[in-house]
Length: 89
Length: 451
Image 1 (tube, chains in turn purple, blue):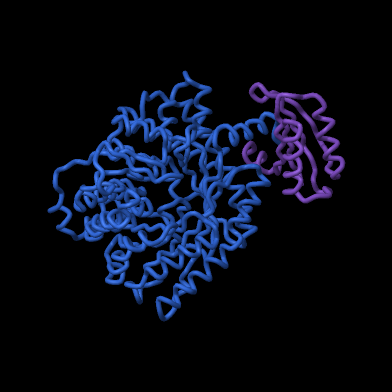
Image 2 (cartoon, each protein chain N blue to C red; image 1 turned 90 degrees about the vertical axis):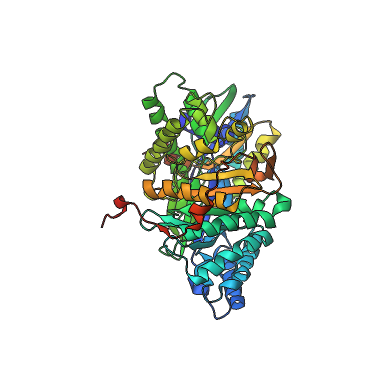
C-alpha cells in the first residue's frame, strides 16, 4: 500500500535517521523523502510502501504517532489515496 | 501524482481548518420488516438495523485512521416509518423506540426516518402517525423525524401545514424542560430529498436500493481560509477559489464514501456537497460570507454572497464526484454556526433575512429559536412561507424552528454539542390563523407541468 508519512515539529536534528530507522525495523520501504516548511515548523514528507510491513497499517500508524510523541514531533501515516483524490483530476 | 505542497495543504486543511467528513450515513430499507403487529414489526426493525449497520462505526473509524481525516458522525437513515406502521399507526411509537434503542446499541448519535410524506394529501394512517411525533420525540434521544408537506410537482398540503404547526408546538411543550429540544429533531420539508445524509432530515426514500452509503462532506473553515489569501480578488475569482476548494473537499468525501460502501457491503449512494457549520470557531458559513466582504452576516448583500457561495460549492462538487445528491449547498442553521449565533445575539440578522437567504441556499429556516408563546398558526404560516419558496423555486426548503417554552426575545436556548445555542428571535405578530385554517392544497405552480 502506498502511504505518506509526515513529520512536523520545531526540531529537525536526527529526525530523518530516527524515522527511517523506525520504518526499516518494520520492513516499510521508503520511496521518496522531501522537506519543506509548514508555517514556522519543519516538515518532512516520506512516500512509503507498506505492503511488506511487519505490522498492519493501523498499528503502524499508532506506533509512528507514539514514537513521534516521544521525540516531540507529530508523525502521521496516511493512505496515499487521500492526496491523489484531493489533488488530481 | 501529488506534490509535497499538496500533502502539506491537506494536512493544514484537516488540522487547522476543520476539514472533515461530517457524516457517513447508512440508508436502510425497512420495508421487509413489516409484520402483523406493531410489536413484531418493532422487533424486526431493531434486528435489521443492528445487523445491517453493525460495522458502520468501526468501519468509519478505520477509514478515518487510514486516511487521516476525521469522520465526525456515523448515522443511519431508514424508510419513512409511517409506511412501515400503516396497519397500526397509533402504535408507531413502538417502532420509533426500537429505532432509538438500535441507535444506542450501534453507538450512533442520530437515526433519521421517523417520517411521513404527505405532500399531496394525508391518509388516515398518516394523520394518526403524525399525532405520535411529539410523544415519540419526547421519549427518545437519538431518533429524528421529518415530514414532507409540499413539492413543486404536487403543491402544498395546507392541511398538513396546519397540523405540523400544532405538532411543533406540542413537541416543544413535551420537551419544555430541555428548552424544546424535541423540535431540534423535527424538520418540516418541501421537496424533501430521499438521499439526504444530514440530520435531522435524513430518511431512506422508497426509490432507493436496500442499503446505501451516503456521505456528507463539510469544510466551511477550509473555504474561509482559501478566501483569506485573496482579500482583493473580484467575485469571479472568489467564486473560482470556492469551486476549487469545494472540489478538493468533495473528492475526500467521495473516496470515503466508495471505500465505506465497499467494506460495508452496501451501494455507494451519493456525496452531499454541503458546507455544514458547527458551533466551533473556524467552522462557520457566516464567516465565509463575512470574508467575502460583509461586515456582519445578515446585512444587505448577504443573500447575494450566499447565492454565489452556494453555486460555487455545487459547481466544484459536481466536477469532483460522479454521484452527487442530498441537499448539496451551504447550510445556515442559526444555533449551529458561531457567526450566525453572534449576529443573531447582536440583533443584526432577522428572520426575514434568513427567509430571503433560504431562497438561494440548500436548506431553510434551520435551528431558529422563537418565542415560546408563538401561536401554532404562526408556526404553520412560517412553514407555509418556506414551502412556497421551495415549491416555486424547485428546491428543497425546510423549517426547523424551536418555539422555546417560557422563553421570550432576549432569552437564549442552549442544546449543547453540535446543536449549539441560539438567542430567541422575534417573529411577526400579525395573525395568519384564518389563512392556515382554510386548509386544502395550494396548487402546484404552472411551471411544474413539464411532462
